[in-house]
Length: 195
Image (cartoon, rainbow, N blue to C red; front, side):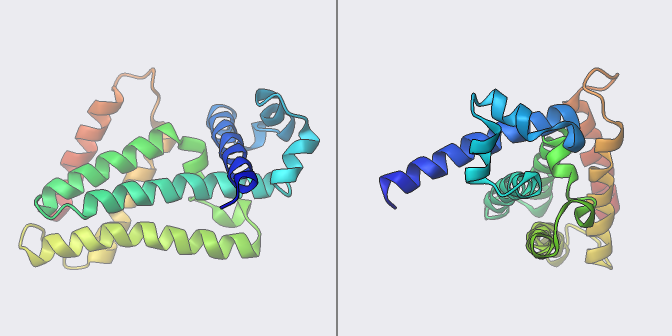
């Protein structure tokens, strides 16, 4: 990779990091190209050198966060020394961390048709399927080892991800429960579905 390409890639990652922070703070509608540019001390026009429009920028943000989450889960899943239960606990904690800390960007997973064009939607759904499959793999591994009792692994996965994703609707960092307590409770209840 040429030096100029590396600089462009680095700048693009800086823009994505700022955009993700702004979207998580202000929501999808509240994040404007002007605000993102201002935070980076850029002109709005210079943002269009890196991204076609806001939709493209939001797609790239979503792709960046979901790809990072997939990498994190794959690393956990590749642990050959831990039991399926221990691996699932770590996967739950990782998912909950993304769902809470990257709330707005991660939330684009919920209604992708609303935010992405047809080409982007196809790629988003493929990435989402890859993410879901990581949970399928651990549920099947746990079932094969006798740790989990999942008659319908894909239904169990949908229940688990659905429950974890719902945290975005109600969790408040200033609320009664700390994030760690929420993660512990979710882990406890999710394991009851499978054990």
